[in-house]
Length: 296
Image (cartoon, rainbow, N blue to C red; front, side, top):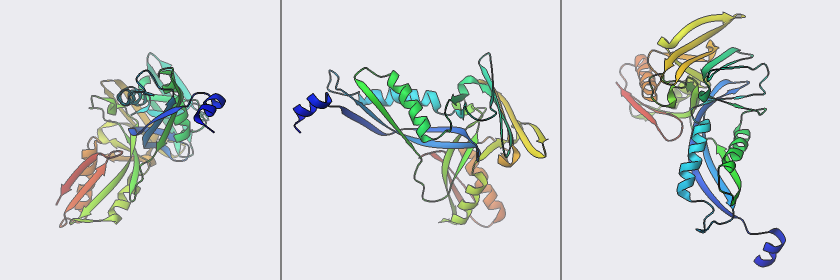
């Protein structure tokens, strides 16, 4: 079929623009089986449509600024939860939101400014449901020549140890102060300058599906139906924050939970067991960034 006949039969030819690795969304969501889960999803995008007066579907510079800004504002460093989650109670008042729910592990409560939470009316929070939500949102903000947005969300391909963790940084002046956001992170541990995969596996198990909390932020420890629970609370620049979750999903450190201090914590714990060795911990915070701590 000639291009002319194809244009007559099917309408004008559609052009596509793509950007790979547009952004990484670092956030947490609730998984019914695993609990509060820190995650890092890589964002790829395709835009379909006719060419504008400049011969473009959409300027690459605008993709990186406008579309990335929409994604970051809507999802990055937020706690995402399904509105259809059985038993979920939602209370909103004066710009704040309180969520209460349960699973087989225990009870949960999340209190924060509304801007820290994204509630999606979907059955399950996963890459497909979130991509569909973002596609609809982004398409509304684009010029009329663009007829379709395709978002692909994926995890980093990690050949080795990794873990999912959530946390909040009360002293941070940005969105890291939100009490439940998280990351999917790889880890490398060197003992006397050689990789020690046994230690990597141990720490990935310690931090898998965990909430890393700071000791001084604990406001309450209690039991519900024989199950231990812990509440972390603090006030930061954005407002009042609190999260309660089963203690079995909590790892407590004495310091704040920046990636620098997490790397330092792991290195010191390794050294405490083998004081004559040298340790170098490369802890990632999501994709392609992190901190290194060394001690001997």
